[in-house]
Image 1 (cartoon, rainbow over the protein chains, first blue to last red):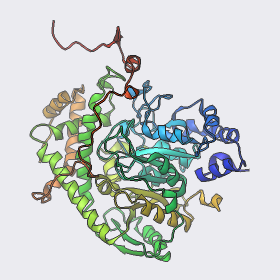
Image 2: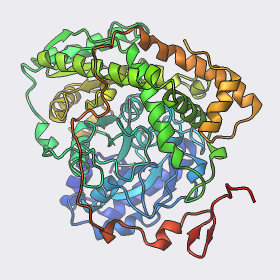
Image 3: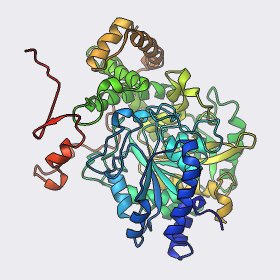
Length: 463
Length: 99
């Protein structure tokens, strides 16, 4: 029998429903895998010792007591919540995030809290105060970030599924680097209540999973209006599982960004993979978008500004250590944000960035008049080697260039594995962007791609 | 283009209430200059007739009833649970007024 920790969420739920496996067996296999590998990969910062006991209590609910890995910036009352920073090393929140509350109510169990770039400032999971996480696909490489611990947990089968959060790439880029599926919902679709705030106008919690179907299942249990987050949308939540197994004939797809500098090495691979959509009957063509290089500037200013404001609360008085304990990256971001929002500079930087943000929103609106979804590489390349983030103050931004434009516009996106390099065992991701609140369209396209290719490493066991 | 020197960096650090050393001030000044090169690119764009966007989903004035809901409140014990120092049910804060 296969190790049960390697099952997808859907398989796990089916097997539990049909009594083919028990929760005790599932937790035993997962506990063994975590005991064998967690120290090596440095994925979980804290494990929930009561996970299995809790699972028995919720086994009659929809999610059956399945263990979920949760990024350590979601407040959980039973486990410390550090955001990857030693400032919050001993912080046990007195309240619980809406996302984890909803998942628990649906029958999921928080198995453990995963490592991340400190305060989610980064794209490597190398800037955590608790050490870097390694990519389980190839431990000489980084998992990406900031939700690198969650992506690595899924990739290394140290979780059945995971939760991450993204402002511009933090779910999708680590998913691409780790060969997992990462779904970033529309801004306002999933509540930010109880998620340690980074950039409040773009923060979006979402699932990191083994398959598109798993992502759809978790999304259904996370999304929806929350009176505790005024920016959540009152719109009705679609059942994303109904967007699976659909024909993509006549779906209009625009290809973005493939011609930009720096993508030469991976371009032929993507050109090849994009043909899958054509074979399935979709109309695929190259689309021209507003230069994503400008999105780097917009994101840098908006994000740093919001960071400086959000991290002002860490004064060491009500909780956590004092401000001398911020790491280098947090100091850089807080101070740059303080500068660009300060008197005399706010117009030159912050207001200008918000205007360029409007340009991106209008540009996407124009593109979506012509196309149902847009596709592009998730990251400019494969997972970088450990140590790579230490060379440049702009490491994350250049890395996330392909994701920032749609993120500042609030658009949803999903990254699916679309290539595996045999020599290194490293993956590339395909990013599918949809119009606001049309997660269903991108899930339909992603699901069709996944099921008609062999890049998803869990596919073989799904037949 | 803005030039960020060590002096300005120390001023910003004070505004942000982040203690930094002399060496850090130098390193940060150079990191800021590197980052702002990317940001300064935005000034090439024509934005005179463009409105800024602060909120992408179009929601406006989301309010709730102005009532006390004890379900959503911390108890005093919860509020103080993570404090570094407390005194008789209060947070202890650093002195800011001189004697």
